[in-house]
Amino acid sequence: MSRKVLIAAPIHPILPRWLDANGYDCTVNETVTQQDAPALVKDCVGIITSTRLQLDKELIDAAPMLKWIGRMGSGMEVIDVPYATSKGINCYSSPDGNKNAVAEHALGMLLSLNKKILKSANEVKEGKWLRDENRGVELDGKTIGIIGFGNTGSALAKKLYGFDVRILAYDKYKRGYAPPYVEECKLLADIFNEADVVSFHVPLQEDTYHYFNEAFVSNMKKPFVLVNTSRGKVIDTNAMLEALESRKLTGVCLDVWEEEPIEKMSPDMRSLLEKTASMPQAIITPHIGGYSMEALYKMSKSLLDKIVSRK
Image (cartoon, rainbow, N blue to C red; front, side, top):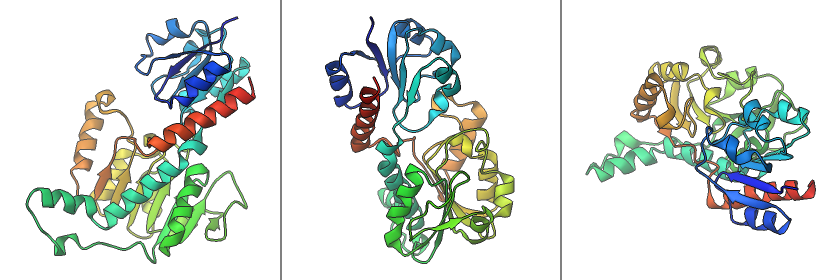
């Protein structure tokens, strides 16, 4: 019986090493394409992916021996989970592995934006020494709204705790989850009314597609900073850019984009990226928030534990 596993994602060596030790035969191919994947998975019992492969019905059907799918990270939108489950295929993710990395990244971008660190550092490289133009804003005393209080949302709240900020959290699917230093909001209106910063930590699904849109912006009572380290399609890019131009948004910190990577963007979406990235009140990074060296190990270990314990 085949014990073949295709690893189509960057992973820590601990993962193939210990899968091999547990009787699996691992093939690592981080550059596999969607077109080439069917031929590679036909005799696989396991597949590990990140965002490179879409484990849709077609690819799942191409792997009749498939027993499990592992996702490096948290976004299960790359897997047709209902279809896989209907075929008895276990689906695992590892959001516990990169939650700290994402939280640090979100906080780092927010501090860099508020204190104008990136902007002023780039100006110094150009021979400019501008102090008054780069007067920063402190987090102290601000109200931070966190939407989605799962692994990364709660990790960010923990890191914000020491900054003497007020932390509001809204999660549509949970109640009674907030630690003492977080105010649990039953209504999104609480964040609309109070927040100076809004940070998204939600999965991409039908009810979160373009969660941030024109209506969201119009509901916000104060100018605010937007942080998104979840999924690009959570943000309506046109609405975001309009809010920046109207100064309803005072800044954006984005680790994801509505279409990515750049080579897969439509011309219009690439134009929006270039326009937004050129603004001094925008910090955009190439989906690296959960991509730390430590997170690579933690995610690999998390998947390993889940796969081996249920083999």
